[in-house]
Amino acid sequence: MHIEPCMWCTYQEPFVLETMVDRFYVTCSVCGATGPEKDTEQEAVDAWNEVARIVREVQSQKYNKPSFAVEEISSYKGFVYSIIEDLDNDCYFLKVDGFLYDKEYKSFYDAYEGLEKLIDILIKDKKE
Figure (cartoon, rainbow, N blue to C red):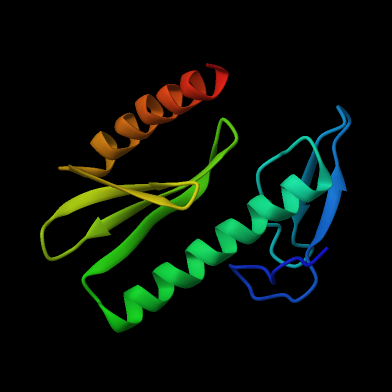
């Protein structure tokens, strides 16, 4: 099982840990970064790798197209998300589990509130 290097400090050997309640997450022993908790080791690695991919993608956008900046990358209720600021147009976008949503938000806080609503909808859709 391949684990991408740490997206924050570039340490080459992050590893999987198990919680006391039989959940798994990837962590970096150098900078302390952690990925989202998941039910299986493979899901934890996949989530970590997805965050690493998003960070690399956004960093390349940031340096090749300086009009974008990542405000936050994390996980919420099991979904990996990022809030991306469009500096040229003074608005924010959401990217959840690799999908970029085209709704524009006027502030970071509006985007975060939109994220909570969007993820609640995605959870409801998953259950159905």
